[in-house]
Amino acid sequence: MSDVKSFEDLNLSEMTLKALKKKGYKAPTQVQIETIPPAMKGKDVLVQARTGSGKTMAFLIPIFETIEGDAGVEALILVPTRELAQQVADEAEALGREFKLNTMAVYGGAAIDPQIRKLPKTSIVAGTPGRVIDLIKRGALQLDNLRFFVLDEADRMLDMGFLDDIKWIMSRTPYEKQMILCSATMPDEIVDLARKYMDNPDTLKLSQDDISAKGIKQYQIKVGGMNKLAKLSSLLDNEPGKYLIFCRTKIGTQRLADQLKKNGYKAFAIHGDMSQAARTRTMNDFKSGKINILVATDVAARGIDVEGITHVVNYDVPLYPKDYVHRIGRTGRMGKKGKAITFVSRDEQEPFSRIELFVDRRIPELKLKQRGRVRERMDYREYADVFGMVTLEFELKEDMKRLELIRALEKVGIRDEDIGRVHIKGKEGTIEMHYGKAHRAVTSKIFKKIRVKKN
Image (cartoon, rainbow, N blue to C red; front, side, top):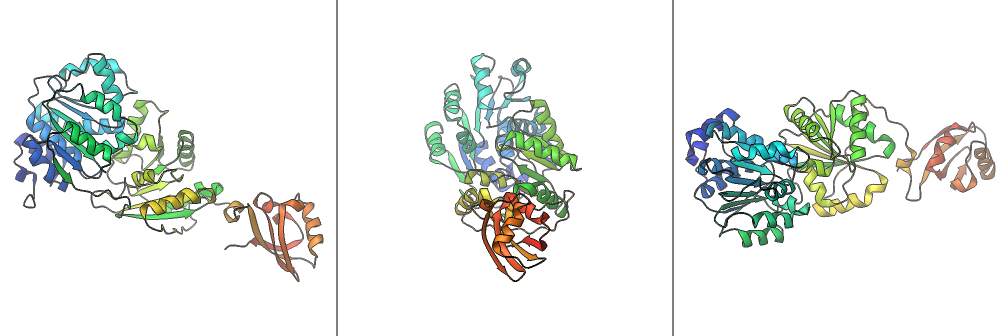
């Protein structure tokens, strides 16, 4: 299909071409060039392609070119998250307006009664497994006339534990139907699904099981907990762009978004404790550029496909290397440049080392100029060893022996057990002490100068 240069070369209907032109699509992507022709011939298609490669239109166009729109729900697109269901439905509506066919997103967290009322007039449904099952059990979603069944982001659905739900839904669909299965990777479970439910599919491997994220510049920033916000502020002010920031917990996500807003950044959170209306509003504002910083949990961000994300920041190191690849894969799409930065504290060195092994590369450190809106503070823990001891270099005001020095430090609340090795030569020397007491040493009047010894 190397001779295909435009959508016109794919022999699409005038209605499809008109809709694509209105949406601003100029030329088909590789996944569209490879997927659309066999799908329009009625073939089952198994597609391995990255999120952001244009695969949504690759399966939507054959659907609209094929279905009649007069037999209830004729196409079901199963996706892992509510955000992805909404995104697929939004894309489908652009085509649907030309074909005069209705599309609908169904997912949990939204009222089910309006969905039930709209289903009889709907031709294409994009939904999450849980809500689709609920609607089938209620008798509201009838699949007797289903002609197309699409599994999108199949590997992520497996990661989220939806395999049994997928099989249950498949068992309620007609035997005679066309299937398109899209997945960024091809684990054995996906291959088994294809063998069991698809009819001699055309297999298109348009991406590798690539775990290195080679198209993305990856960096780490070593930082203690006290200065994470300040470092992030310096990054945001040094490198303006469209940021997706990951935190490990819902509480941490909301807290960080609030802290950023307090300091004048256009940042909002998205996590599972938010109402669906708030999540949708926030996502739309992020897509449109009304806000340029989105703080998210892994679960809330699954399925997010937003153009133009310049930076992905792992504010917390992900526990699992695979999550790291999923996170950073949201930048550097469609041939554009992207940057991924991971904040690494001393306590997170081990999981970060596992990530470096997984992606088979050493991730370099990014040095930032300290010019953010949030000022950095001295965080002695950043310089402590594995035992929590930090080394201080000092110059005394007058000569002192080791015992005299220790007794003087007792006056500012530093006990003998807080102190490690002490070396004094003349008025200069070094002292080890627990990072939690180092700030007290600075207040002692025995020192002319005292500072952290940096490695």
